[in-house]
Length: 205
Image (cartoon, rainbow, N blue to C red; front, top):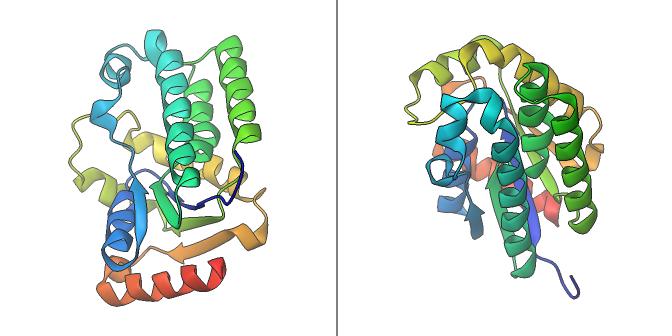
């Protein structure tokens, strides 16, 4: 990948905290190319929900490749692109969660790990990681209310996912991480989203 690269922002957080909604709100106030998760369009997601052990590996390989492909599109364009979730979240939280729950065995997990490392070697880290931080009970409340036809992560997984998320983010360099207090229902208000946009612009220079 030669020449000037487009810049990448990823919005991360626990399942149901508001990643996709915030990403969409930022698109409304800023000039961003947006790449969303699109769960219903993934080829193995429904099969995975019906047979967790048989389809965990193809589902995770598909997601890791899909998110890397989205990054590549963003990096090839001018300006700034934004993702809800992204390659690193899919590996460090979801792939590891499915490994810990036994949906992926050791060899399958190591295969996902090799793929993630290769993809991240080919693609630079996101320029900015926006972390939506909220107490577990708040996330659980939002997660219980959201309507999603396909959703592998369950309410009982939220604490485990939060621990995996924290372990990953503790390794991210400070200048690349912007933590947002997402505990209040007003964190998605127009005023707060516009304030976040100004901070993002400041961070990206």
